[in-house]
Image (cartoon, rainbow, N blue to C red; front, side):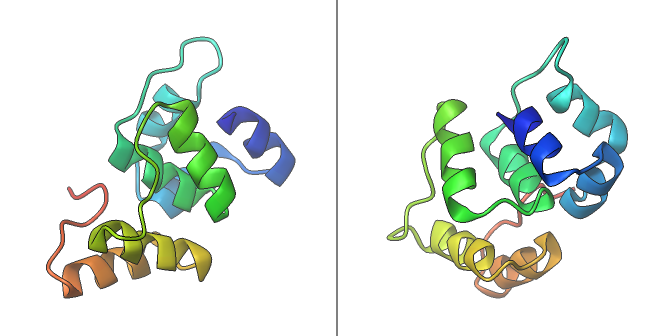
Length: 108
């Protein structure tokens, strides 16, 4: 699914890794068609945000990976939902999470 979106959006792994705040090598592990690995929910959300996916695309990716969808009644998920809807960067979403006392996505 992510591979098809990458082709449709004409993205490169370098762009995605930069916008998802993940190393190129780490991204290749999850985006390699020959040997894909399953990212955690947190990493998948970072990839979705880095790929500038809309909310429907993000929820679909979570569903395919068998993770819980973003749930608006969960305050942390709600902040992430808002950021995706407003096309915020990962830095902006992490800042909002931090400001509300939540763990940031893909915290290093």
